[in-house]
Length: 88
Image (cartoon, rainbow, N blue to C red):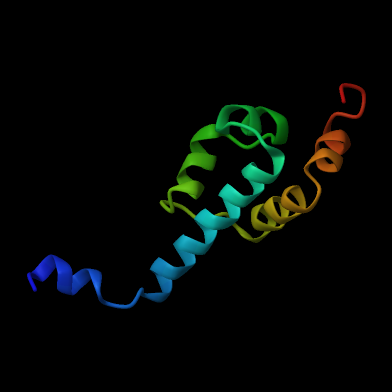
């Protein structure tokens, strides 16, 4: 086994695990809304660069943003209608 394989077999650190869970949460919300990153960004007012960072695990949303992502996951249409009641 070479060094890269040995490192790959190590368990995730708490920080790595948190980043993976954040990425999962962001992707899950976008999949529930059935939108591209660009369309999700426009619809829910999240900058596309921020969304990409979340989905790729480079950054984590704060508690409020994580709650917003959970709300979108649970009912994407209702959240969009709440933001733009006249246009949906």
